[in-house]
Image (cartoon, rainbow, N blue to C red; front, side, top):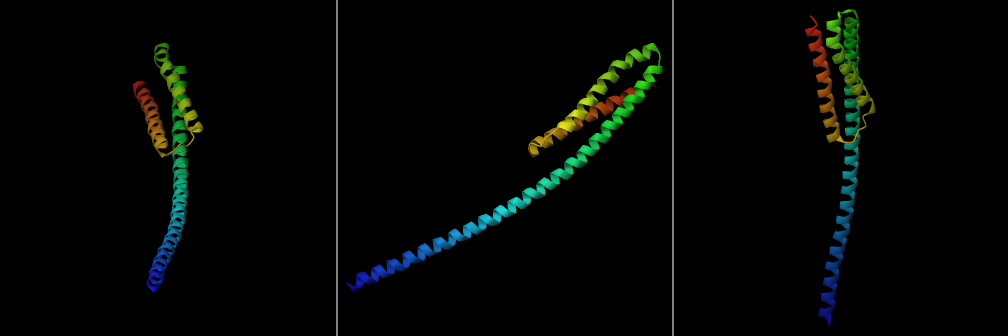
Length: 146
């Protein structure tokens, strides 16, 4: 009978040790999860701050390029007004098309809403490509007029 008490005591001891260690592991896991959540929150805030800085710089640069394009288009339009009919007819449609594309770019930058990093990268790439096309076409027009 004493042996049964000893066996129960030993089993009780091991059960208590297992339960206590499980509880300690659970508390440690909870602490680790809280730390991970805090770290993730911190990283998210840093990413948002970095995105905001990048967005403001990108938007500022894009608006500057759009204004530059507008000025070049207006200069070209003024030259067209004083030019001969042949020159005027040749370039008037191209200038109107470029002016429309520039307006579309202005609208695109103004209405952009952040939808995630992948979409942001895609937007930047597409926007820069469109902006480069307008700039190159304007450059080509100014080169051809001479």
